[in-house]
Length: 456
Image (cartoon, rainbow, N blue to C red; front, side, top):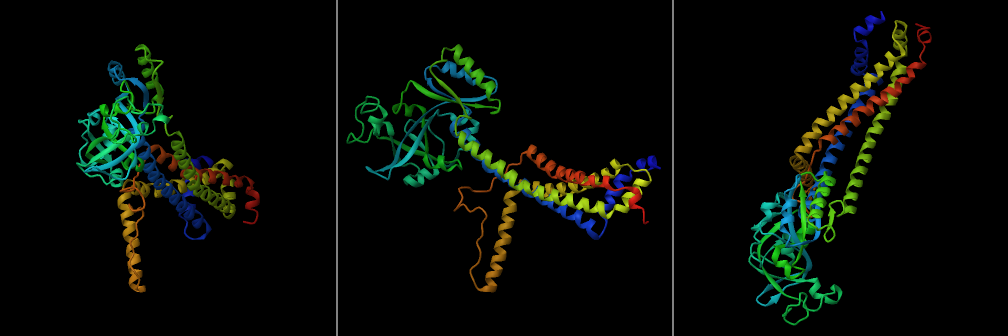
């Protein structure tokens, strides 16, 4: 009899029978955990996808526009041969020289100047869009074109253009902080030693640029404070013999190998002592750490759903063991071992976990990959309800928006699905049900066949 029982797969049959049974506590004990796991998987997957969209969008914009993956400061501008060797290394996508100057930007029209705004002037090669595809993907030109071939052309951020009131073709002035505060910067009045710094000799050199384009990155700081000019134009504000090299890698996680190769090339070229090499992990370390902590805490908070569901499954399976005491005693009397009975409850957990995880994951992936359409549908439904209530109550209609551009600095809600995180969430929901069911099945070891069948 025992062999026959095992060959017929009775464990799966009994477990599925408990799941399918209509009415009673057994049915409720199965339906509620399935619903709970589905809701938990759905919520966690969608929330993490949206969070990834925001976080990775910010991180990638910082790396592609500002900090690069590897930076070499105080690099001699006459060593273009070394720069070419670095750009040709395996795993290096691009190596772009640039200069960066902080100062004040203001609009200049017919001899009158507008309100000054703090700005960061980033000087780049004219063909930067061709050399750096990552930079090109993040800097979207809204007006004009990204033309810095002329030394007197400038590209403004969209918010910087609004603050200064500058438009396409207008003239703007940039004044370096080093020229405004020579005592603080340690540079004698006149900055580079040239004559004619400013009309009154007080505010530094007033170099005029013509606005040839307006860009938007989606990162408020860059759109508000950053401007781009020709690489040679910034030599007037700093040491023309030096610039910074920004290196982009094909895989930013293979940082140590690339860093070793860059250091090797610079050592062979005799540049080991002068320039300073740093990586993207050194820049915005606090910001990246905060984003990582935020994501971890979100995992923990939403993961509490699974803990609650696991406790529900645990108590439900223990209750089933008590309800099915007579059936368990009968199975034990015909040869089923304690392990076999525990496997019945464990497989019950497998069915609950698998059904709940799939029921939550499928709609979660659909929502995450069509997040814009989902929120548009949600907004339409809410606004319809508000308009219906306004007609009944005589009030104003609704204008509900989940992420309004007037409040949030975004055009649309980003979403990024990472496969390994999807698998992790699925396994988390599935294994929580299986583990709870297996732990609850320990109660069957307390059931003795003779006692269970004594009054039958």
